[in-house]
Image (cartoon, helix red, strand yellow):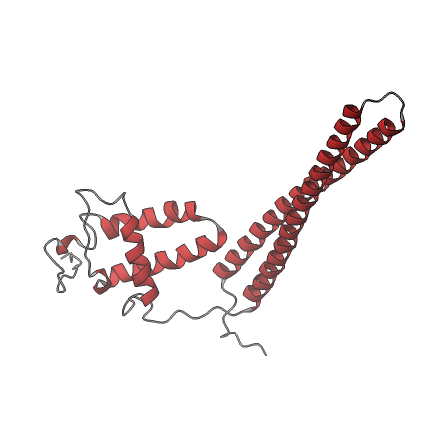
Length: 229
């Protein structure tokens, strides 16, 4: 009898893993296309070398060819050989990228298989209000805020002790998690538009989380829901 209490796989993890597979597949296709073009360039360069060799041989065997004509043919052959070597080097580099892209795709498939087979981690009852920001989140927020320019306006608010505001900790923790995913998946534009821009008004707006900290951190400020009679 199956245990119905066992959680199924996390659909979000599966979606992320599927996106990684798609991204790796696209990267492999691009690498293979470049490798094919580089191979064609090697073949073309080899053909140019053969033509230049035949031309030089004809010049050397023909009567009446002047020394400068033979020297020019020799120089042309040397040029074609250098181009051939450069083409082979470029092809070798691209071929390595193809191998790396195939390995990345294989790894992405492994992670997808794991995501489909791994039960979802239950969400703790107290997951809504983190007790405090993790050190890596604190360091990330300090770096992020040091680069922000769009929030430096008169209608902005900020509290250096943001980590003592539970909602701010929650929002920044979520932003940091999505940031790391976006960096790995190369979807930073989506992170700015779909995550940062959605949280920014609440984190930096004059009427946001830190509106009561204009003259210093206010540890006693708590929002109270209005009750209807």
